Length: 234
Length: 234
DNA sequence: TGAACGGATGTAATATTATTACATTCTTTT
DNA sequence: AAAAGAATGTAATAATATTACATCCGTTCA
Ligand SMILES: [Zn+2]
Ligand SMILES: [Zn+2]
Ligand SMILES: [Zn+2]
Ligand SMILES: [Zn+2]
Image (cartoon, rainbow over the protein chains, first blue to last red):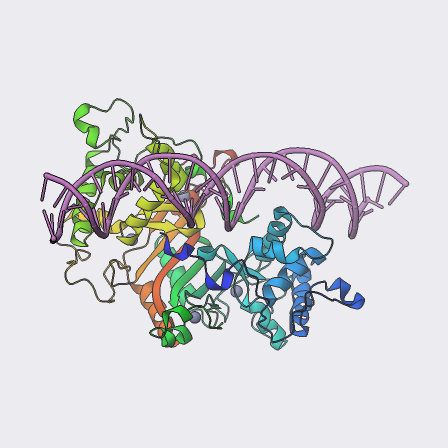
């Protein structure tokens, strides 16, 4: 029934502290110096978090510890994370956040284009924008807050910020749970814009979600059925 | 807070027995002869239902009264309908269906390509396919069950049946709640196919959801803010 | 015929995801 | 320091969806 609702292998209630960074996830035993970082984020993740702070400062937003933690957890995960998964992962030591805490942080991160919501999974992934930002400095996405993009297509095929349409495209693998953001081309978004123009429809946000099998899992398809879900992919 | 979750004007808990058919909705006072039709469906709706029965018979499915009622209610509605809205509307006279009843019917209708689920609204709409089927007889969508479409693009830009990818595109108006299925061109689906080929991704299903303002509501945009939601549109 | 089977439905309980409402605390501004 | 505004804490609840198991009903075939 309602196929996509089948418990997704990569989103099961068993947090499985894997990382997309290749860095240790030692949620326990955090040194006092790292206390502000709380969750033992990898160096890479911390870099992205700093980047994100800068980005949303430019947009007039405040990257508070709460929001930072949520973004960090999403960045650190190797698959889309549900709101209640986040809630569980935030339950370290003394803090026991309630749903509104997480949803508020998610709303903020969504509004600032730092994460996306995968509708079909009711789960969240980091925006690739952020990772690109981390790689170099002068990047197509690096637009100033004082004079943000004006609805034109960006190189990555999706846009951010208060003015532009926030649109994104995803490939969702049913076998491994991996989600890939298609951000290397404005083709799809351009086509949507064309269609909307024809229909005199004002686009405010858009999402494209394709479900199927990633290259890795498709190759594996015929093999031992029980093995399904054991793979790693992104 | 996750904007699309704002109570959608056209989906409020007040069923508002409007029709997309222009036919009376007399949910009460159903004659004995119509007892099998249960919900006073318009003639147009009944035609579509018959069509649907034929279609899914060809696919080896049985259009039971339960499923028929659910499809009829979705056809009759002027906006996407949520599962629990359907549940309420099914509560006539003696019958008091529980959630699984409705979800099972919805699953069946989804699998047979008779309805679509709008992820952003957690709600369901009829597939335009069906309406087209109702208009004429020899139509592009009218493919035989014995030899169904083999993944080629259909004229309407989305496909059905066990073999083909089930994909659809929607324009969702935030003001009036109207949803339009973009089914007049394979352009978008073709582009998605291209992208998937490039990424060696096997597409099994896809959805495109654009949120914004329909032509009607965009025209109205500046006027008295309180009036918002009063309009009718499709 | 009638047991066996499979598909469809009924029912109760529960799981998952998300929001409301209101109190409190922290930051910035005046 | 007071006021205003943003962010967080907390409890309760709403909205959406699934599980598990019992029952019914039409078909098959011994
Ligand atoms: Zn993105
Ligand atoms: Zn995969
Ligand atoms: Zn359709
Ligand atoms: Zn509208």
